Image (cartoon, rainbow, N blue to C red):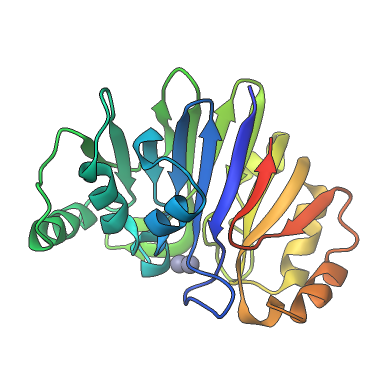
Length: 251
Ligand SMILES: [Zn+2]
Ligand SMILES: [Zn+2]
């Protein structure tokens, strides 16, 4: 089974002149899954000719606005022209985010609640499974709420393929997820904002990664800075890419 990964939005916390906020779409057969829903995720799906009705799961890594801000737009699009059998599970990384989101969905005059969308909370370990994929979560130290760490990395398994999504990490890269260090993955989508490249190089070199895609790209690495970033990771023993909005990767 092949998966197509599209980096819809690839910017760090703010939109930039060439990148929108973070959202990554994984298409498997007729189904699709969204990792993060930074704004304007639903518009970028439309522009990329991706059917919103195919979305089976939306998994936010954490509640920072650049990862969650486009979610109301995604839910609005899901409710707009439903197809028979359409249903989407939306996973929020903090329990308390749910009340705020639901209040906003009502405030913007959506027909809410809706049987088309189910809200759930991310937890450590196995999180989601259907006939096409399995997804598991592990905590990072990027963001905490009053209950503890409230940010997550994800690993998606599609048949014998594995894709890791780091989400945002801490400033020393020490929370790069264990499941990317210990087990081989075909593709690792890794953020590139919160740590200096030097802090990540050794860990990334030692991890059994098939192919690496940097997303969530920080300002210094935009435009002409891209060549510098490429140099800094030149020693990686596998192929790596610096993602732009709309790039597609087959796994
Ligand atoms: Zn971010
Ligand atoms: Zn963040």
